[in-house]
Length: 215
Image (tube, rainbow, N blue to C red; front, side, top):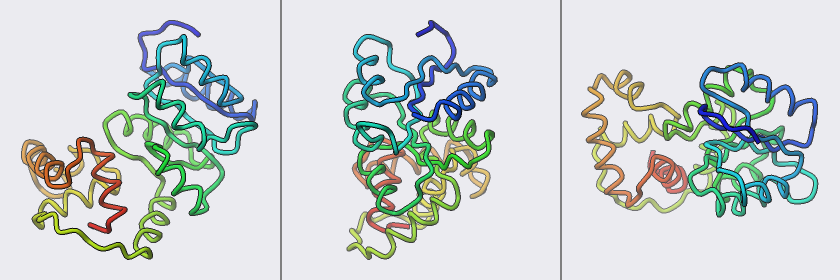
């Protein structure tokens, strides 16, 4: 492991060629550094016991030994502030739900272009829950089919509009632009949304909104 003042990224991926490609992509980005790459989740878990936790872990699902989804709770126990970003070939509903329920911060396909991956890493650091459009649509469709009982959180129409923008992965400035609001006003709506939904983070608000069909 190398010491760096850049944002530290770890990569857990058993395909050596793909792992090197992603590591090179990260290394080319100003402010980012790929400080750890592992072929197995178990090796990353062991490293976390002695190394400084990274800002982001990019995690494949189909790993030898412990799967990426199985690894998330173990990784999060050792690195509670680290964003766990799934990067995989799988887009079936069962794995998407399992990853989100395990605590994944976002879900991207390996076929995504490099710029989408970099944008997703920046977004997750800003508190968003990045997913590519196809995955996000599947998640929304899937939760809508569950038809959960909607709790009455007394959200205003404007708060619902802000929450909708959050589920689509937009950051505060983008929400402000889309809804013709000031960033200060969006901040106020976010505080009200968190209080009404009884959550403390954007990820928590988005997860509850999707699970309970609030938007």
